[in-house]
Length: 451
Ligand SMILES: [Ca+2]
Ligand SMILES: [Ca+2]
Ligand SMILES: [Ca+2]
Ligand SMILES: [Ca+2]
Image 1 (cartoon, rainbow, N blue to C red):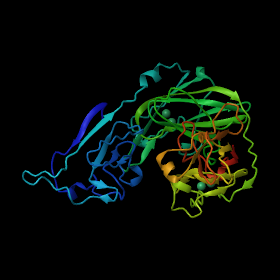
Image 2: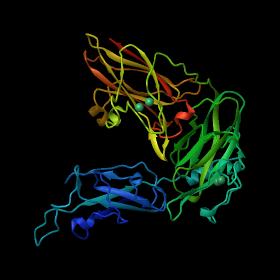
Image 3: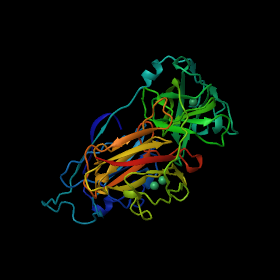
């Protein structure tokens, strides 16, 4: 792919349709709707035809121009796309034959791809830094043995970590790589740093990289513990991101790596900025402790609501109009696959007059809260006015919290469908870093139906 708009697809050779319904590797087609499907080789998404790695899957009606925008960042590499006839019921195997003599029954299409370049290496290299990472790793990245800043990724952990002091004057410039081997295993360079806070602090991790990157905070010298928190940062994000947590005095380790593929030698800038005093989130449960088990072993979920109608009933937690409830979410990996726990609830206006729903939400994590009048409205992205928001992250905030109030009253008998999920600092749904075993996953909702 290169920048700019390119017409990459027109029907150039008419073949029997059954012959067109093949994946590049000859494997079976996915069992869901598509007209355009993509796979990647060389870099993320990897050359793996498993359904997990599809990143295009969009259906178009005849003679309707369908636009599709992808937020994935692609490193240089080769990517495959498949165009196939299909409708909402699945592949169309008959009905669009090749032109017969002068009769054309209509099987042409045009596909245009526009690629927007993202590049900030020049800007990263222009930033003043105090330290330049002395790690040379491009001679043979697939077999690189990191003895420089390998931390908990060392062959025998813990390996070395580099000191990262606060403020931009102590910034680092690093380099990394994320390279796929012939077996589609991504090999990465992990860079570990050590930081110390002398009192309760929340701070920004300023990771400005020329590739999608991730930072994680770990307890120092405790590789078995795993990360305390982490976030995926888009490339060329020239800004810091506040930690979700308030960190008590102590030493922590910071791990930086490419979220997906990255060309060997790609640069990043790393600094810790805007450290501020903060209060720990001492969550105070109250009201009804719901039977909302945190289950990241089997993903057993009885309140998956509109997200998963195949989950065990009853699908929603039934809340009253004026009460307090608390429960738990999780976001983590189950047998290696990312999962999350949406918590859905219903509230019925049982009053005899119109009422506005008000929700006061307190969480140990960053939450998104949204309310709909039906699952159809949820699928259409049409929340109740005033009832869509997040528990925001502020430097001094103890536990994230917010109050959302509907802008207009709802008639007696109206049923509200509410959803609470865990998000990151960019507002993205989280599927990592909140496994059940580590806690910090409780929420509390105070409901009210007001005039
Ligand atoms: Ca490095
Ligand atoms: Ca390294
Ligand atoms: Ca839950
Ligand atoms: Ca749930």
